[in-house]
Length: 279
Ligand code: GLN
Image (cartoon, rainbow, N blue to C red; front, side):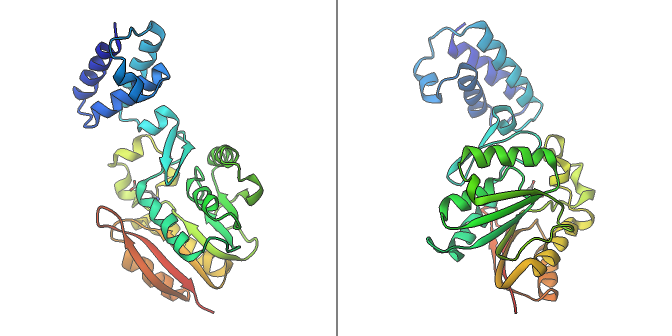
């Protein structure tokens, strides 16, 4: 069997299971199984595939057919300008979360020395991306999930920013260390009534998605905690879900925040809110 025949087999298996991205998925999974780049794969379609690689390919195709995200099968995902180590203990980094990076970089200029906190760091992709762009900044990150902290630490080492970040195991309620110039959070914000009907809930950690009643329960905690931990005029940048804007803005105002802006994602959903803690 050659690369092309293996690829066609992968296409067919994924297609018959209604995986829309069957082409790219099969190509990525085959190149991964062969340990070569996608370009090299496409240029060498006549090459023979050995049985170990073919077996690995078929088992990865099976996982994908079970709707497991590609990032979990490959153990990696691109976010902002970097690649991160990912497994099922953390959410797959989403492109919409890059808005939080973008907004943070607009607020902190290149050489500024600021102290940041991320509430719920998961894989660490958000805070690590920011620290890599702002070399004078220092951060704390918290997460309540031990397994997520392990992944965050792997990524901190991978990106060599160990001396500029400290990671703590804590939930949002019990963290009371220091004062920050800027706080970031992409907390769980899916309404728990809808969660079980979503594809994401089959493979991704429920704790990172479940926002309780109407999805805003943790967001509310993040806002209250941030009002205590931010310096005066410090910024809070949070990600929110569909239809949560008004409720979240109301809570921000109630907790003495000025709402600077809301940012829509590429699907035109209000996804990110930037606010300032008033003195
Ligand atoms: N953006 C994710 C989704 O819609 C949810 C992430 C979260 O709850 N923070 O699946």
